[in-house]
Length: 352
Ligand code: PMP
Image 1 (cartoon, rainbow, N blue to C red):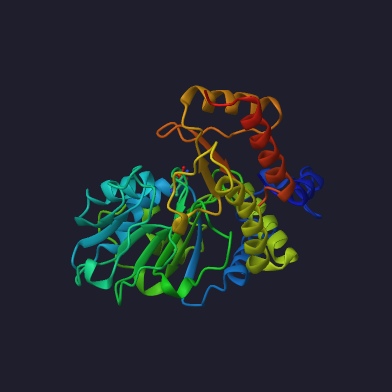
Image 2 (cartoon, helix red, strand yellow):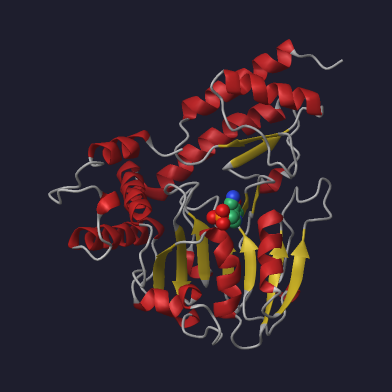
């Protein structure tokens, strides 16, 4: 979801942005209006996330999946080795992509948990190779509904995090990371924009055969305007950043997200009809996974919920069950409606 106020603002400016006489969709990325939009988007994001001046903010295309390759291409500079914590499907994909470019080790994994990936592995500094060029994690595991409840201590080794499904959901200490990246389509903008926040000293060491469009130096030197960026998505992102600032920033967003997530988790903990198959200590605030324990009932739940306007509740195709993705723009009332439906469904469909 996108915040209603943001959609309304975009609607009001859809045909004509300011005095420009055109839609943002029709603008040149070299125009003064668009340069102001991208500069203002960056300034608002810096303010929201408290991004220090020695970090570059890049607005790119290609999705988070392209960063699975861009990260090793740019960061495997000294020892050509990196360590990955595998806590779900996306970190596994990232690890496999990186293996094409260097000596990649799995420092820790929760694949063997029961159910698989239902927790976040614990790590200590000694789990990481001292000569690793970076350590990679996926902070919130969209499919499994888990989130890191700690920031791994990697000492001097830069920590890289995929924050696609939790970006801007709560404050995050950027200084603890060498690089953060996110596909914007969950909490920021329509699909098509990828955000990379990278410490300056990690830029400029890419492998010589790195495609120019994946080289952070090209992208940073050109302020994300080396080629045509996803202009409309950047404009939408700017509106979302400004909306977040207007409601009180990430502290307030966190408060709202905790309130929403608690409503479902408290209900799940209070009954036995549904199970939340995730370690309580690592529950995601964005993706709440639950099952009835009976696949036919799960299917019925998803179909009947959709008929009541509660859409997109099917779990990821790889694990089934249900998943409520309650991203930033989902209102509290939406979660209330879901919990009311869950109660009704449990009463109407007793397990034999
Ligand atoms: N990482 C995470 C945590 C995700 O949730 C997703 C998409 N659901 C991806 C990576 C892949 O993102 P994209 O589709 O932008 O490549």
